[in-house]
Image (cartoon, rainbow, N blue to C red):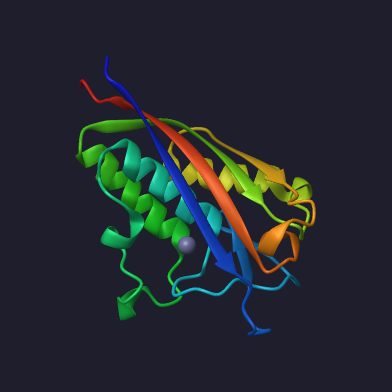
Amino acid sequence: MSVRVGQGFDVHPYSDDPERPLVLGGVTFDGERGLAGHSDADAVAHAVTDALLGAAGLGDIGQHFPDTDPALAGADSLDLLRRAVASVHAAGWIPGNVDCTVVLDAPKLAPRRAEVERALTDAVGAPVTVKGKRPEGLGALGRGEGIACFAVALVTEDRA
Ligand SMILES: [Zn+2]
């Protein structure tokens, strides 16, 4: 059986627009400052998408969902993730699991971690685990200028 891994990384700065919601892993964090980006700027969903596309040898999220595409303005990134998973299956691969580390100073991820994991697991159709990591005051992330996410995905060959 053939097994492959893929890595994903994404980072978005905070938005100046007070109306913009914060969406992480498809979950909206009410009352928190949103991230800037063409879509809903869900850095967690984007990193997971890139990890899965990379594992299946399908390039990256920018190729599949260009940030110059007007149709993707404000897009639901969990929906883009579902579409990427369909491409992974079409290429003959089955997601095994995805593990993520979200680097952020605020908000605290722990209280909503199970919810984020559930939303991502539903979208991927395989276990997605999420860990929060504080940047300890270092660099742009430590100054609370944005949120980053790392993800690793495993896929197995679809032999059916
Ligand atoms: Zn992104």
